[in-house]
Length: 470
View 1 (tube, rainbow, N blue to C red):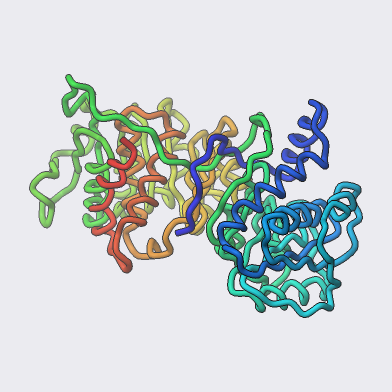
View 2: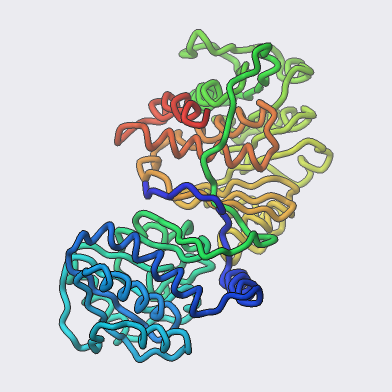
């Protein structure tokens, strides 16, 4: 799982938003040259920690990303570091030309053989929209392969900032990516996120941008109040179905994520832990309990007529709901038409496609765009889960989660995620925030679990993840 530093400003900006934010800084009295100095020297701080006096090669392109490279190279040179600058092309922007003039070392051409310990990619930045030329790709690949460690400044060259798509095949991967000014979508979206290594941010003074997405960060939670009791902490109703194990997994995760009372509505108590309450009564009767504060339906539900009936009954409960797994395949706009309470849907890619068909969405574009379109069409918070998880709300809010452990790619972990989100919802957290908190707890539980964990073992780590937020 890549590390992501704790942020004061966790906003994620598109290329257009970042450009406008920089223009606002310049209008307020800064300049492109001044911002480049802040960004380049901030990146140099991280690179200096890595190189520890070893050889550094900086590949500079023709634009402002190349200018950042000249600035950071000069900062390393001033400290007595061993730095080689390779110019992939002559600088073209005025700021890059100025930065190269300020660099007091030698500049080598693209044909120069260079090898060392740390390679720094400043060839192209977040504004790139076309594939790298054959010459640029060959140069980038050759230098990356000739060094032990690789650092990308702002973004790896050849990555599209707003979508995370690779513009060329077989791009290098990196040990560290240093974002400049603000996070970009590509830092969180696949396939680019898998090649970026650890993520660090160099602030340059960018103000909050209206409509910006945000990075999912560690929640700030509190222990229950001194006079709390189980119902005040939240009663979560979990609707079981044809495959009871999945609902049990979700229930156990929910117990560890903060709800005071988790009640599973199922036909049998077989293989259920003693501390999980199972209600075997008629579903239509037990879900009218006015102490319920949230309902979870979908894990192990099945897809037959009985499952459809259970889903309809669950969504008739006038409390916030989490819809997961089989229930997502059965969900239709009609089932949500009368709902007033918040609804959270947690689809993986296949379920996302099914929901897009059901709700008349095009299903094209970036993952954040698709999640937001579905959220607005269904009037629900959408957690588009996967190796890159995106959370979208009908009011336009979007959050992206840092890439979590790839060991999560095992059966049942989605049930654990649903339980985490539903538990936070039952505890009284607003739906979008509950989704973000549940996603963070899920990722942190995975980080704390041993490799090759099962879904049950993942669920056992949820209380420790919650404790980290207190």
